Every structure is written in structure tokens, then in C-alpha cells.
Length: 521
Ligand SMILES: Nc1nc2c(c(=O)[nH]1)N[C@H]1C(S)=C(S)[C@@H](COP(=O)(O)O)O[C@H]1N2
Ligand SMILES: [Mo]
Image (tube, rainbow, N blue to C red; front, side):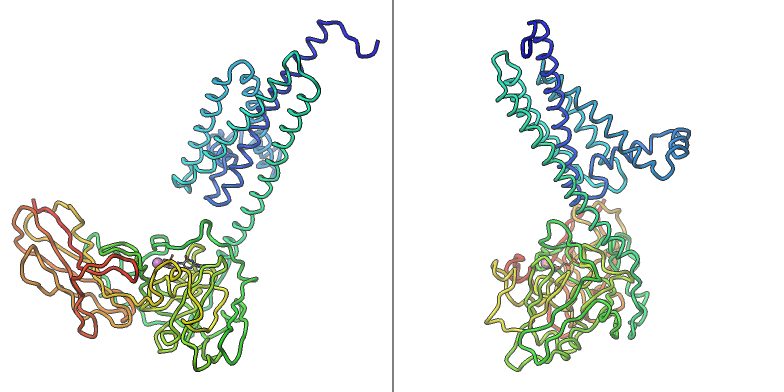
């Protein structure tokens, strides 16, 4: 009696098969969510993967006795046990949501959205997460909704009474495809995070050599005593970051090398060890972004450790008709730096250290360029791997092909940090302060103007070098109540007065005086 069944039995088998299909649709949707979120998390903080975040949240909520029991039973496999348990719970929930979708898609969608919110919450509540770290969970959740909708439709068709093997196979093919694709995504995410973490660990383990030529200790007078003034040395974690990299390049120092070539007598390639073994120097340099608006924050000062680019080029021996150094980063960014700037004796560096640490990953680990006096886009190539000596007539760098000037000397600028825009300050003595920069020329004077009054000289902080900014302070005694403004302008080491003429950042840097409006109460 093969192939012939009683109608009731047949009905029951079909129902069971239907349940299995809907359950599997839920499972596949959940797999898509975790896998895609895990893949994307490689580009965000480590805890942006929902599995990691939920695991960490779970560990934090576990009572000590349970933690001790798990560790006693499973030893160092405790994390594996945690992930497996989470996986089983997630699978059960996912199957339940799939079954729910059979009778009510709306309830299933509501469940997934609620779970997405819970996972997003687990992610952002981790100490090391920022708001952007929810992106993987959000994308994963949206994707899993689409997968569920798609597979539930297929399952519905396959469980109709008129359904045949063809529709059932279509469902099977679709869901297996989803799970396999999810596996591939999760594996890729795992591999990506592993290289990321490996680079982080390599950086943390790296011991930079001391400078052969240390810079003289900073004069304490470089830092003026004004509450709210940006510090003279910008801490690495507060240093502005500008680059075209969607995800921070991960360069293994052991695999890093710099190729120096082009219009030179001797081409050569340098390894990271060779660079560290060279005579390194230190210097304080203020970096500035060409996109910094008047009064803006895209400027910072660090103590850099590196090898002079002038010596590197001397070793290569540029030919007489070369006039430009074209540097390329591991991710394809390029900058054109005038050759003359790199050989005129200023402290242009192939830098490995920033404020006594290896370069942070987002600031160019393991090697970047730092050139005093030029905006970053024509000089400060991070993750630099290639230096070609060439001519402006022959090559155009990344931002210059997009309308920015191919030369980028930093313009004389000054800024009011205190009082802040729209601040309310008590009457009497108003303390004002800020900073001014004209790298390679230095700052010789800063003046402030209250409302439409006379320009008055501000007090200057000590000068660390002509390549750094210089702080200023001004006390306004007997300030009357009401609305006021302060405008600042600087004079550089050559006696040039900062221009009042307003220019936007494009194409070669902003200009104009910074003015702050505030109220004396
Ligand atoms: N590889 C790479 N290097 C780069 C850039 C970039 O986009 N990619 N941007 C440059 C620009 S425009 C600036 S202002 C500085 C900023 O350096 P920071 O992020 O360390 O402050 O890096 C420069 N170096
Ligand atoms: Mo920049």
C-alpha cells in the first residue's frame, strides 16, 4: 500500500511539515540577523555585534553563584558555553517567531522589532559603544524582517492544499540559501574582526625606541591658566580625525614597508624595523585641516616621533627636475607635497609616535607623514606606504582632483576658545583666551577687540616652536552688563597681520577674523 495514506494521517503530516517550514523560516531570519550584524560589526566597536553585546550584558547580570558554577563545570570553555546557550535560546525564540508568523505576520514583525530594540539596547549600554554602534543591529533587524517575509510567503504557498513538491523545494532552496549565505557573512565578519583585533594587539605590544634627538621639555608657560582653553597638547583621544577611510585601515607593522621611488638616483624600500632602527627625532607640530572653518576645531598639537623626511629624500637623491613628493596610503589616498618643503630643513617627519605612544590606528598606525606648515590633505598621509618623487605637472593627488588647491600652505589663523559663543559670564573681570597658529613662521602678537573698541594686545603663552600654535589670554576689567563681542587677530613671526577678508575653506583654506558674541550679566 505504498504511497497511499488515510486522509486524516495525510492531513496531520502536511500540518507538521507546514509547522516545520514556518519554524525554519524564523530560524533562517534570525541567522540572517546575527550574521549580517556580526559582519558589519567588524567596522564598529567590538560590542556592536548583538551576540557579543548580549553575551557581555548576560555576564554582567549573572549572579556570582551561577558564574562560579559555570566556571567550575566548564573551566575556560565558559565563554563557549555562554555563546552556545545564547544560540540555543535565540534559535528557540526564532522558531517560535516563525510559527507565530503562520497565523499573524504582524505579531511576528512586532516580535522581531522588539527583539531588535532589546539587542540595540544591549549594544549601546556597553561602556565602549557609541550611538553609531547600533547600525549593525538595525541593518540586521531590517534584513531579517525581509528574509522572514520572503520565506513565510514561500512556506504559505508550499503548504496550500494544492501545493506540490516543486513549491516545497522552492521553499527549501530559499531557506538553505539564506542559512548558507548567513554562515558565509558571519565567517567573513569573524575574520575581519580578528585582523582588526590583531592589529590593535600589535600596536599595544609595540615599544617605540626613544628619540636619538629628543625635543626639549615643554615650557610650562606654553599652557595658560584659562578655564575652558583647549590644552596646548591635544590628547590623542581628542585629536580631530579626518580621512576618507570608511573603516580604519589595519596595517600590520611586520608587513608594512615604504617604497621610495620615481625621479630619484636610488630607489629603495624600507621596513618598519629599519625605520625604528634609524635615528629618530621628536618635535611638536600643530596639524590643521584645510576644511577648518574660522574658529573651528579641526586643528591639534602633538609631540611626534619619527624620521626626518628630508634625510629619507637625501638618501633617495631626487633628480633636478622633480618638484613634488606624491605619497600614497594603504587605502589609496594620495597627497602632493612640494619637494622643496620637505628638503628646506623644517621638521617634516615620517612619524611613528604621537604623544609618546605608537600612532593610534585612526591616526595612521604604523606610519604617517607630518609636515609643519601644510594642511593635512597635501602632506599628512596616514598609513603611508609609497613615496614617489615626481612633478606637479605629471600627477594630481586625491583632493586636488576634486577642486582643492594642489599646494596647501596653512594660513595665519587665530581663535577665541573662551568665552564660548552665546556664553553668559558674570560682570566684572571677564577672562578671555584662545589660540593662534602660523606654522613655520610662529606667532609674534595676538590682539583682541571688544565690541567696536580699540585693538588691544593679548598676553601670549610661551612659544614651543614656530611649528605649533600659541595660546593667548586677555582680561577685560570692569565689563558692563549687556551683549558684547570679542574679535581676535594674530600677527605672525614675519610681521604679517591676519587678514580680515573672509574666505570659505575651499579651495585653499578659510580666512577671516573669529568673533564670539556673549552676554555679561
Ligand atoms: N590615508 C589618509 N591620510 C590622510 C587623509 C586621508 O583621507 N587618508 N586625510 C588627510 C587630511 S585632509 C588631514 S586634515 C589629516 C588629518 O589627520 P588626523 O586624522 O590624524 O588628524 O590627515 C591627512 N591624511
Ligand atoms: Mo584635512
